[in-house]
Length: 90
Ligand code: HEM
Image (cartoon, rainbow, N blue to C red):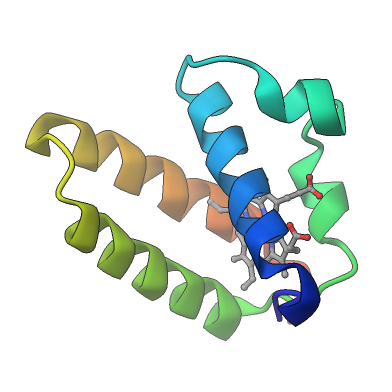
């Protein structure tokens, strides 16, 4: 679903969004404006299965990077809630 020709760009947008969302520098909005994530995802077919797969991959990534363990529940809760909100197809 992610753009093959701009995978590095997609990674950078997600990274800068997450940095901003959790209190870091606002580089995402400087480049992209207000996040409006639901709207930006509207063009992609996101159903329950896609949402669950996205979570599975994001949790594998969390496992891989070994962040301080006290921040992991906060990130997981955000991912679960936001990914459910992104569902736009039955
Ligand atoms: C916690 C949930 C999620 C967050 C925080 C998130 C965040 C983002 C952000 C910040 C972008 C870049 C928007 C832009 O500036 O254009 C993006 C793009 C995208 N997202 Fe998500 N997303 C989430 C869930 C999902 C899910 C569940 C899917 C699909 C199963 C998905 C698929 C995509 C795709 C295909 C793009 C386009 C790649 C790009 O051009 O950046 N996202 N997402």
